[in-house]
Length: 124
Image (cartoon, rainbow, N blue to C red):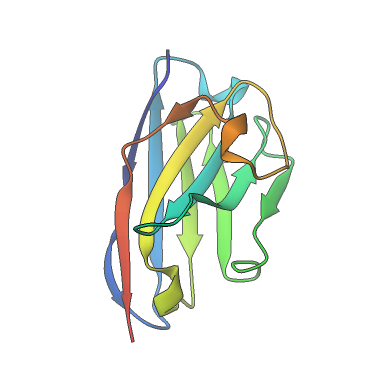
């Protein structure tokens, strides 16, 4: 079993930055593929970024390319999402996800484990 806990959300003005972190426990992080998703009320959970277990492969949603960076530190069992040049449309609850198999598909159904989410609010 894997437990994921996100942190780092908050309120920021448009153009600002936030760094989200996801701490994993219960299993060696190096074996897990990790992803970030986001969701707003009444909408489906959308893919943001993913990274393979080794960190050698990463994929981003078109909407965040060039602004967000996913990274991982397997020694600390954490995955981070650096979010720059934030826009009001980035406002959402951000979720960390993990699975034993890496997929670049961006589908939330590829991930077995989920965190509780952290709120990111970008004001205009």
